[in-house]
Image: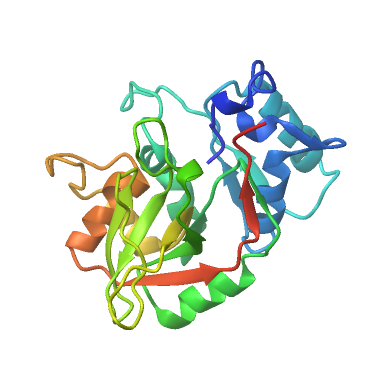
Length: 257
């Protein structure tokens, strides 16, 4: 996913999307994602939408033209077709627009990540654990301490938080709530820490196809367009098998100057 507007990084994002922002030398944010995810995948699809020119030019010159061989990349820009008359309407909708590419590839698993994060870990271990546990979905999470600075002006927590029961099963994913569920200690008291979703998912391909074509919208009448607020809650309601992968803080999202 590489369509971030990056409004908090203005003026760096005045003429380019957040993933296309330079971070050191000629490297851009999108390079961290391509190299981390691309090393573990047979092909990496990049889904841009916002101010795409700079990002597309960079990807074509660096990866597709052959200067860098760490990843097999393909850019999938939004298209208006006979059957689709609209642009991407969310993270899940962007994948649904291009799901035929995944089906043709016959991939057993699909990693979905963000193009505007700096990763300093590789995806080999999460992918191996996902395969060994045979789950429908693995959600990569961070254990993060609750801080006032992580709440917006309306008093809502900026991150998605996973609620887990004592046995380790995921109960719910809460997006931008005022009182995110905290991790409990052995006595059942709040610890001041939460499980934050990193927005990185490893799907079993069949489970991904099913979830994108199920009525997981918030009103339960249509298809879900967003993974965090619709697809994952819908899968939880249907008791799909989830696995949490707890990562040490080795990812940084650039959102402020």
